[in-house]
Length: 363
Image (cartoon, rainbow, N blue to C red):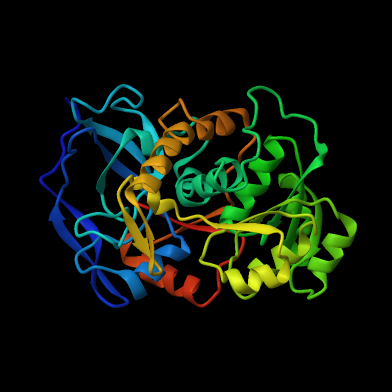
């Protein structure tokens, strides 16, 4: 039972229609079988938030994915990986199901889908761990994607010059996490980004940086690293998927993309490359459809089990990397205005006005 008094109703930013949302008072959710109830302290914006609002949104669904907050109640069958009073971060699929989403005073989720947040990380910095952080871990380490060795516990390992990983668009939220997580496993990390961000990304663990606006960058990377076999494409549009394929070894390799790719054009860029599409929403364990692509229940159940290895309070890889300092949150900027100001932030993201930082809204 919770010592926290949970109100019967709460405020939330809910979808009114295409590209439209407003703050409403709605019923506070209650934890279902195996679930926990989180009192949300802060949220971070992600591109998926405005895309759901514009293209996939369901009326009365709550906007938003990323959150940090405190567990205030839990179902009797929620296990003991997360306890009441524990501060946790994670993400949910906002904008998709009526009454579900992160931009609310309370939300329900599963203990296997959240990480405990070390005391050294503030609510502002920890609010953006979910989408970007877990996507990076899945893309790098899950066997169906790049399948890199999982980072060891203990001190940061030495760089293995034979284990090379390209992170395309390294200054993005997910790219920043991918750089650090790849370095945590001992990889030699190569990044692309605008030149103004090169030194900063090297401070996160990148060994080399190339300008992604240079059309010759894939050829330059391939010439310098003919044995490069892994690429994490955190941009996944406007030709980046093909660029990653061209940068990899002619003997073959793996590219993980965060948006659907064209198999024909990727194969033309490098016929020996295996490319996969990573969608974090499959971790629900339920059949998922997006971009006209169907992920069946078996696929999603596999991803749900892998999420348990990455999250699950203090038991997962995310907490291990955060606690050791191997993984640091994105640069974050606290915005004023709470829920009422979120739509302006989403407009900035739509218009490409946010780069290298997370927009955070406290409640």
